Image: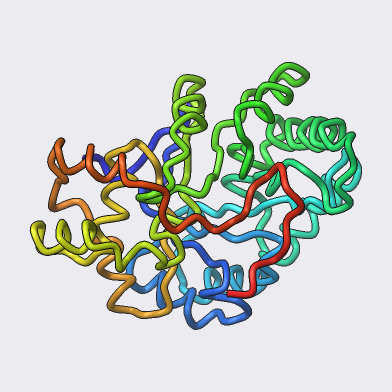
Length: 282
């Protein structure tokens, strides 16, 4: 298996990213360790409140900026045309970079829960299209958009999202949404490939991890890759960071993949884009 994905516009993306939510909140040492372990695909967001730390870790690594694939996200409070442009510039300033590799709308519905949220999504997307065409962003996409959100966006705008980040892990594969994205040429990224560790105790995963002589986290990451989904694991441990990158030397068999894909619902975060969203405590 190749160690990159290629977006519909030809941009290459390292096949395993490092998610910075919580694991690296205001702590550039964890991000520096991830870079030392070989991660070049770093996923942050304005909402994570750690863009400054991500940018500092990249600069202090001594590695050329062009070696990194940096993602950030537009928070729901900033949906709209002018507010999206301002939020993007603020993210660049905090990161200390002059372009992003990927910029996403973080959630489809805004913080105030207004019924006209799609109008604000569309205006934000038009701003992102301008930034993309101007070369300030190499790729644009969305996060937590389901097929009905995507259809409404694509019906009114010119560029199909290149990426959709979704909750995806064994026990919660969102098959309808993933299939829809893949038919449209939209790369799905898994913002929770291990279900925030909720699924790691599942007996079937433990059984398969023993069979393939890997950790249950490695099994989950490999599962995502074999589904054509780009995983964004999180960790604060150097050893687990190494393990989470070491997922290209084994392959899950077809029957085992089917068993993992048909697990009953397991480890769902409880977050859904059509419900009022509350920041998780854990």
